[in-house]
Image (cartoon, rainbow, N blue to C red):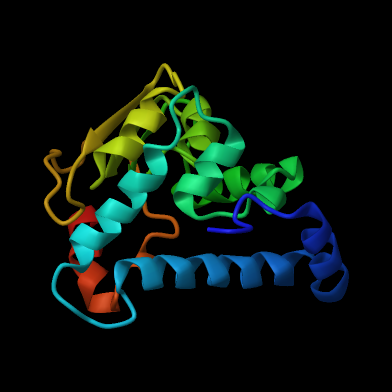
Length: 193
């Protein structure tokens, strides 16, 4: 969409009015509404999964080389102007690692990993990282991150093919906002437990 990759002048002007955190939230909501409109998620309808998968497939297919942070943000619907701030990335990584109680020996599962935006933060800090997503093209991009201890698998979050207890922790980050209702994602939560 126009302006997704960012208009620095508009970003600075908006940041002066809103402040960094408010701007991040506002831009995130704008991007989510773009996804909802593109996928028809504002209306509860059949086929929303197919439209959502197609949306992320289309974005990921536009990245042909080793992905940059801006590429990963684009695929995941994040603002690259916000996430280029190393302090925010470090805070996000620290927060996820603490919530997972993860360390260098941990085996971690991310459900809804897309192209590996979070994998590039978490995988280097754990023993084993597995990311799953319903769309293959973002997984192809994630594999090009060349994270030595990471594996990326196409899977439906409601029907994961892993053994119980195979992972020390599992997480979903910013996935449920893509569903038309909480009930649509409830099966993923139950499967992760």
